Amino acid sequence: MSGWWDYLEASTRQEVDADVLGDRPLMAVKAVWEALRPLGVGLGEAEQVVYARYEALGDRVRYTPPDRLDTPALAARAAALPGRVTAVEALWDGDTFHDWFVVLVAVLDRPSGEGHLATVRQGSGVAQASAAAAEAGRALADHLGVPFHFASPDVPDDTAPRPRTGEGLSEGS
Image (tube, rainbow, N blue to C red; front, side, top):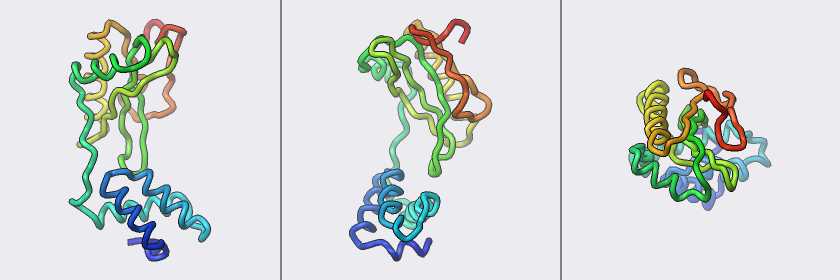
């Protein structure tokens, strides 16, 4: 384990362990980083401290269950959003703890913006996450009668283009 753990006050250690046990890695990293930043600890080192706590706490961590990807569950989430869904989109994202994952979002007209529908983690690989997200996204888009877009299904790319018009995705997306 990182030697930085020993520099944390007992209350911060308890906070970090509570966040790790509840599978809230970003909150844990924030607590470590804020506590150790005056000592010159960077964000990457704070992430390593938290990763080491995940390993140390092992099977006691209550991992967040995966989002349901069936069409009825996704349609219910879409219906709860504050606007009309004009498109469904799959986007790559990633972080230190989960590596790459795909986020399914509903593109909304009014209020304009988007709403989170599901996060698809890679589980057994990036290709599986991509395939599962594409299948679920297409099924939901077909169910809602709107376009589906996934700019980079084959390669994780969180800068892939997101075609938009005032009414959702542009034609041909």
